[in-house]
Image 1 (cartoon, rainbow, N blue to C red):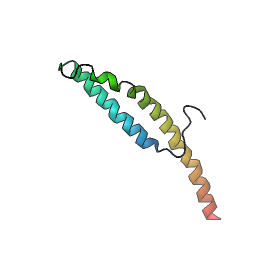
Image 2: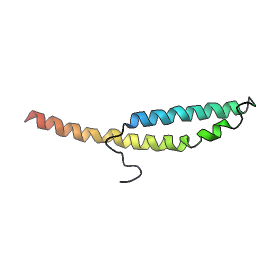
Image 3: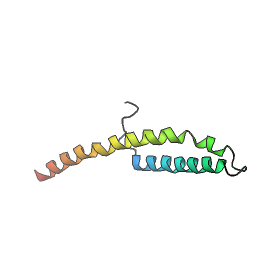
Length: 80
């Protein structure tokens, strides 16, 4: 099982959504870092979410392509 191979039991829409939320929060905190002294450096904690977000988008793309083949097979079984 590779790093970019999706697991059939994981909902990658949810995973990508969570990573997107924390990536947006990281961006917000990094902008606020330059305007307020109280939030200085808080964005550093969330920086690891940025590459994870892009990874989740790649895996989600592969995950969304997989069910198409499975759905076609199920429909052909129902027709028989």
